[in-house]
Structure formats: C-alpha cells, structure tokens
Image 1 (cartoon, rainbow, N blue to C red):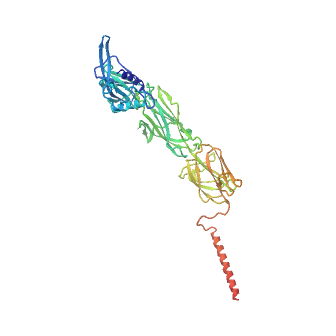
Image 2 (tube, one colour; image 1 turned 90 degrees about the horizontal axis):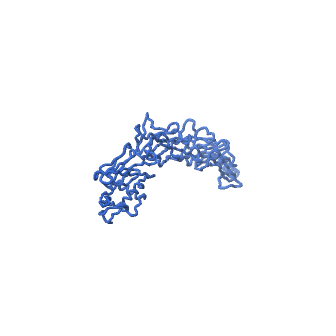
Image 3 (tube, rainbow, N blue to C red; image 1 turned 45 degrees about the horizontal axis):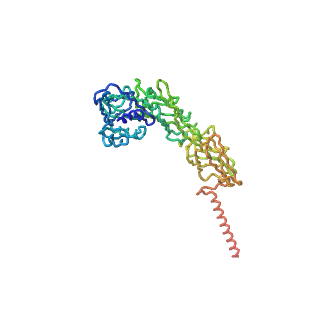
Length: 507
C-alpha cells in the first residue's frame, strides 16, 4: 500500500502533461476530516471554458490500528484493475484485491504511453464533469472515497480522497503557453501578379500567462510583404472553430487597420475569459499580388508578428511567422542569322500585359481579360528582347504575327517556359549553327547569342528570323501560279514545234 501512496506523490508532480508543454497540479490536504464517503475535490484557479472531469479508478479504505504508541492509519486500494491498465497496477496477493492493489514494479509515470493509457481510461469512465467559468473554484462534492484521475484537455493528475483526506484541493496552474504552435499558410505559393491569395494564420491560445496573469487581448500584425500584397480583406476569425466575427454594413469585422494590425479582446468587461482555455485562434484573409512583387530570387515573404496583452502590456512572441510566395518572368530574344538583334517583329501573347513597360523594361502581366491600357501583342525593340514579368510557372505559347521587313515569319508558335531559378538576374548563352539552328555547344562556323538581364531572372528563348522569299502557307496559291504558267509555256512550245515540222514534211 505504501508503494501506491508514494506513487501518488510522484504522479502529482509528473503526470500533468500537455500536448506541447507541461501543466502541474498541486494538492493541498486539510487537517480536519469530513463525514464518511462524502469527499470533495476542489479545483482552484480553473481556466475559463475548460472542462474538468473526475474518474474513480479504485476504492480507498482507511484502516485504524491502536497500539501503545498511539493510533496509526493505513489505506487500502481495492477494486478491479482494468484490463487496459494491467501493465501499470497489480494485486498485492497476485490474484485479486483481497489485500488491495499496488503499483506495478516498473511503473513509469513520466512515460507518454502510461499517461495516454490513464487518460484514455478516465475519459471513458467519468464520475463527474463540469465546465468552469473561470471566476471561482470548481468543487466536485459528494464523491465516494477513492483513487481518482482528474482530466482536462490539457492533461491529467491522480489523487486520493478518503476519510483522512476527504477534501482534496488541486491548483490548476494553467501553464498552457499563451502562444503555441503558430502557423501561417498560403493557398498557393506559385502566383501571378494580380492573383488573389488566401492566407491563414493560426495558433493555440491560453487564458493565463504562467497560470496567474489573465490574458486580456491578442494582437496580430502583418507586414503584407512590405507593400507586395494589396486589397487585404479578413474573411474569417475563429476561436476553437467558432466564427467570432461580425458583419457590419455588409463588411466583415474585424479587419486589419492601416498599420496591418488586428486586436482581439480575450476577456469581457468583468474580466472573465471569453473563450475556452487552449482554444485555437485562426484568422483567414485574402490579398492581391501587386506589380511590385519580387520576381523569383528569394520570393515575397509575408511576416506576421503575434503578441498578447496582460497587465496592460503587450508581450511579443519572439519568432515571426512567415509564408513566401513566388512569381516569375519569361523572355524572348529575336535575332537574325548572324545573331544580331532584330527589331520590328510582332508577337501575340496568350494573355494581356500593361501597354507600357515598367522601369526595368519588362511588361507586367495583367491577366487573360482585355481592358483599358492592356495589350496582348508586343513588338521587339532595338535590343530584340521582350520580357514579361509576374507570371506563374508553366509553358506559354507565343505566336509571331509579323516578321521584320525582308525576313520570314515563323511557321508556328514559340513555347516560352517560366521556371524558378532562385536568381534575381539572367545570364544565358544559346548556341546556333551556321544556318541558325540551335545546337548544344559552341561552333566555330556558327554563332552564339548572349542574353543578360540585370534586374530579373528569366530563362529566355532565342528565336532566329531568316531572310529569303516567304513561302505561302499550305493551300495558298503563292508561287504555284508560276509553276503552272511555266508548264503551260513548255507544253505550248512543244505543240508549236511539232506543228511546224509536220508542215515542212507536208511540203
């Protein structure tokens, strides 16, 4: 019996474990006994919204022995050891509870499997449970004497109530970290300029700092990638899965203020916690990728700073929570058969861009819908280079609609690929043979085309325009008429020649 009693002391200091951190329960044993089988378990400093449950594992019987030295008491734990807990407890006589129940020889109460087994059993055998409002101690009264497991969503503890200890006091330290398991995600990290991205920020909360100071407010601040994200709109604020936002004049509330901040009250006017201890706070919002987005390189990192308020002072979470989205550029270089740049070639794009190029010389992606100030056909400048920035990764089919004067128009579309290079500049060399056909390496009889872009990363496609007569497309009349007329002339000459010979022979 003494072994199990010693185990109880160890249990109270080790078993109360959170999913991510430890919660400790302390026991206060009063001196004055109460009536038989009328025990009370009192939870001091309970967390608001937290559900506490007690489950009796064994009966506790007190025996008194009178000797010349005085009266001594002993406690016997009796009952049936649940099958699922047989690895943790044993009968004193080895077969039944005639002499009581004690802890197994190798019981390790710090072991996660042991803790989970006790908690699982207790959840299925609740004697009493109640939800705390966080304003006063929580009392479980009228309990039979026994060996109890107390559980919350944060952990569990073991204690005994009996005739020598009929009122057991447990202090919930509520040491759930005020900000725990923070996360930030985006629904897409491969984006184009103008795309609406949905972000989600979530973290586990608490109602007290270090189990003592009530948390009155949570603060969420977002840098919106330093101007890269615009038109930011909060669409949902949930605590424990319940939406706490309101709709005012058709607009969801709360929203980020001009400084990118949202403050969420955590107590009511009376100082009572509004939400369940340990509940997950989740904020969902949308944002549009602006034309100022960085192209490839390190991408566009969106940082969120979290903090909570206690004693009127904000306490920051040390590590910002981040998410990064990437956007890319494509490039096409037009050259002649000697590798010199060609101006005046017109190309039709499968999307629209801003009609005026940006300061870096690139055109800005503007989606697939026509609009004012948008074009989907570009003409190569003197450099022969066209760049479009702000596209998602993938292959884009670009068609030449008009070749420079004296050059053949391409017979088919060109495929240009947007790929991630992790760079912020472009330096590439493309090799061609003497006829302008691409090859794998430098040729002494061919030529090389070098493309250097200082401010953007784009994998360019080099396109060669060749001089000469432009043959018609399939089905066109083109030079066919000349072949036909030539054939008719040859036939006609043959007929004339034959006729003259016949006339001479007839003479």
